[in-house]
Amino acid sequence: MEFDYSKLKGLIKEKFGTQAAFAEALGVSNTTMSQRLNGVNEFTQSEIARACDILEIPAWYAYGYFFMKKI
Image 1 (cartoon, rainbow, N blue to C red):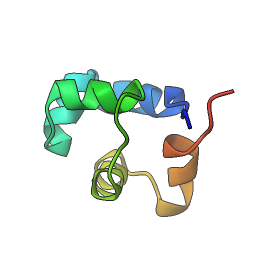
Image 2: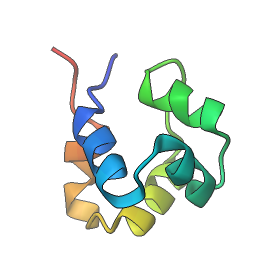
Image 3: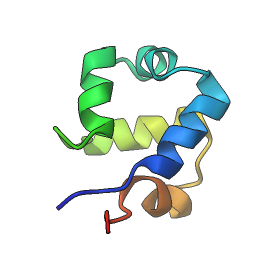
């Protein structure tokens, strides 16, 4: 299943400026982050939880950022 991370990418840009800065804050490499955002590999549960914390996404909004199906 493919997911649409466009909303997440917009929030990352708004809060961190770059994907690389967000990846560093999350504790993963920029390559790993690129793979996650481009659907090559999936986000882990712990990455989603940490991302919600550092992006200040309330838990009940996580679906809209991490689980929107690509149409």
